[in-house]
Length: 168
Image (cartoon, rainbow, N blue to C red; front, side):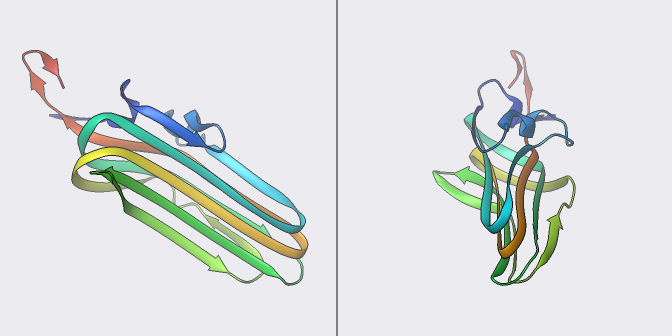
């Protein structure tokens, strides 16, 4: 038996919010679905979402993903930076979080959460979709700010079986 990426199946539909979505499923961990907000004396929220709905429910054995969140601000108060990243499975009509990261700081600085590619081994049945979400927020009262969210890649693998009719 072998593993196949359900996200790459022709029966899988894709829905993207923010950036160029297909960069998050191109098999290249160097390209990303990205949104950046930046400026002076204000705030920005940047969100990217990629939802991949399978043609039929799968038993997901492993999900590999690369997400990144970046914020930077300078200046005087008020100052704030937040990051949230999630990977969720749709199981029986309800979203279940399988990965979550959050960061919050009321101060000036830079935060770059870039852990690289991560594989999450699981054996979760009845998964009909996988969703990645990255949101960053940055505030600078009288200085510069940048908030960037990235989805580099999302892959969800299930076991294929061989029958006389072929693989399924």
